[in-house]
Length: 449
Ligand code: ADP
Ligand code: F6P
Image (cartoon, rainbow, N blue to C red):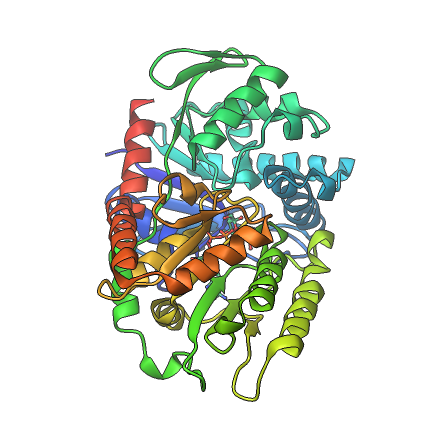
């Protein structure tokens, strides 16, 4: 079997790296003597001209360094101040600076140069996410001919948004050097095809093949999953003492998201406020736990959201709290996975309401964690990629606080029979389409491409 080489922005480090993507790729990496290359995590003053090797995992791991300047231009700049807002429908938050796109090109080129001496002619290369759109282009320039696939974990923008890039054609030039483009959802594949039609040159061929900028490649949808069996076990055996206790016996509603403007956290707080204003019978019956660790705080667009959410939570608590009951608890830090799994299991409602999201793994984790005999209800934004396969959730429009408040009230009053029926359909999908299924399906398609 040819060797699998995975390249991502973040390298999974630690002696026993966990996380869905690592688990998914571990078997393929281990059985093919594979290699994972990524960023070490902290910028350095004088970067090495070599990859650094990290022993300890079942596969080889190697990292590249970045200077502060490259980190600012490539990661904080072009990746997270241009591509991230663009792909999440927030072109108003884009901060376009010429130095950033140059830094992005430079870092992609540098990764290619560091990688090439370690490649073998029969390798398969799998590039992850929007930080590395230009990597195949740079590898091809250096003469690499082996199959290279890309998987985009976030949404692909439609033509109106794509047109906001300074040079949209360049994005499609970069992408045309891959053999396989993988997207999370049908909507992303349609956006990609339509944007390429309007802003570049594309001709659909048969069997998911197309001609992009004169090169033949394949593009298809591979919805990512979680390590379902492991997460079910994690939730079943979660420590009891970490579960949330409520003095009033209120049902818990949980939200778990990085504190990102794409996740719709303030919108969901406003909907909760509306719910409280119009349903006094639910006072002391529902407690909302929002866990939202900080993320990308050095990026300007993330700087106000903590204050906004804390302010909203404070206002709602001030308006409705009683001696025994705090309506919203807002935790601004990461928490251990087994504790998280136990909290999901205890929550009567899982609230997943992004304004835009590639897939949203929290939706799948919430379903996997439920007790099948008395499951909770998933409320899911129709703008999450997950909504394409999780139609048995209560699907809502996160921009409409009335609709969201009504869905929460409906979930609170839903019969056990309806909860079980919806949950069993959702669980079937999360079990069948786990992360192992995702990586195997993608890698088969890359082999065929
Ligand atoms: P994104 O990739 O945009 O962050 P996803 O929902 O797809 O969104 O994935 C988020 C992952 O991060 C999930 O696996 C979730 O469990 C984990 N996560 C989010 N918040 C926390 C937290 N506070 N503590 C621990 N894990 C978290
Ligand atoms: O899911 C999209 C994504 O950008 C992943 O690539 C990344 O690991 C995650 O969100 C967290 O973002 P960051 O790596 O910027 O902290």
